[in-house]
Length: 270
Image 1 (cartoon, helix red, strand yellow):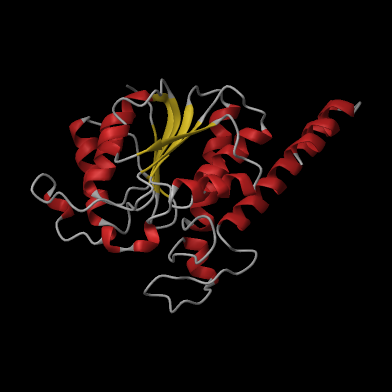
Image 2 (cartoon, helix red, strand yellow; image 1 turned 30 degrees about the horizontal axis):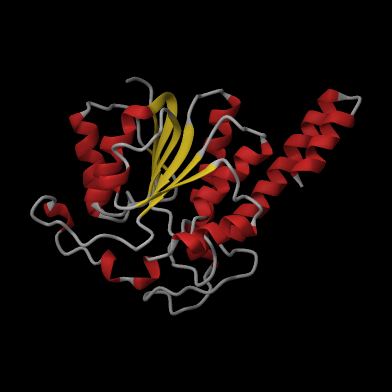
């Protein structure tokens, strides 16, 4: 697919028409990847306790269920947001790699690498950060906001690194750009070999996981880069971590809603 796009561009005498065709094909490819990643095309059923193990198109659009076999649970709107922002930082030459902290089956990271593939962006990496063992038990004494959190009890959230790599490979996107950071965020992120980031996507659900990622990685986010927080609108402890961090750092960049669940903001100053 990518090779054919490049041939169209290189072989065309009309560069303006070629560029328009290239953009159209890129968008078609990425839209199809998005629908596959969230199980929209094949109407993958849910496996969560609250949707009756059925396919609900609205739940899938807004990322309100846990798909049984699809590679992402973030829904179409958050997936489109990620694609849009990843495209924007490339087109605007905002320096840095892409990372997601908390990847489940890897779908959002697969999308980020698909965007890089269509732009032939060999100068950026996609960092895939996860324990690959599910979520940690809450450290309630240190992080009271996580008291009573039950994410660690859901076996459905524990996806092995081997399965995530296989999912990348299924799309032809397990390549030299993809780097894995296996372990708890408090152990892997502070010394991760990442110099700059253009996209910082957080999907750790808990206060601790969200705060660990922000503390370790926010200073590496380039001016003009984006912070995306997946569960801000539905997990109070996640929202509190974001609010506490922004207050501590006096961050005034406006928060933009995506779909009632996810949010993002653009970093405008150090």
